[in-house]
Image 1 (cartoon, one colour):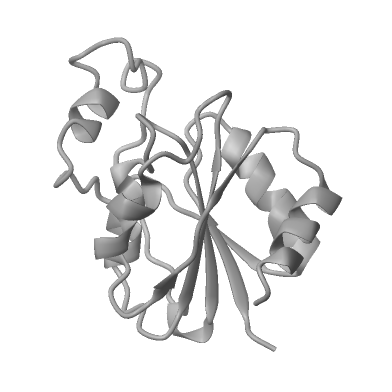
Image 2 (image 1 turned 90 degrees about the horizontal axis):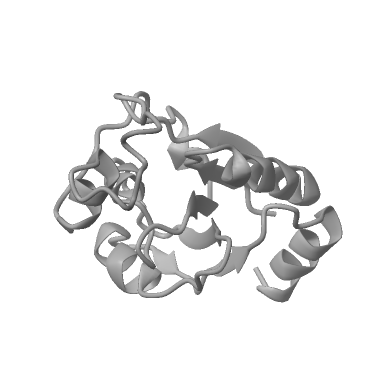
Length: 159
């Protein structure tokens, strides 16, 4: 049986809730991807072209620093990576996280939260950051997704 990790970035707590429910549903370890410089409410104002999140998302090469790395990443075969959808893709801090490790031979499965957006070009943007790994199609969930729905989704992945 492979060892699973649910790693997530949450700007407002919604993704954190889904990640915790997912980890519990599938018996996985959990890890929060925290930015070295936390996002403020002003940073997250996507309607402001000068907001930090807008500037980062307009630059595909942007790689916000993460506060700490998971020290035992080599122990995991399957990594679920969760995040809120920003501009129809994963926030670039997810690329930072993925590029921080040797992912050779691992399976990466994105999951996202959104009030209305689909997964967009997420995998297209994450693929270059997953060298040597198998990147599976991701899925978007509402913040109130239940234990059973998440468990059924994972079962349907055929891992």
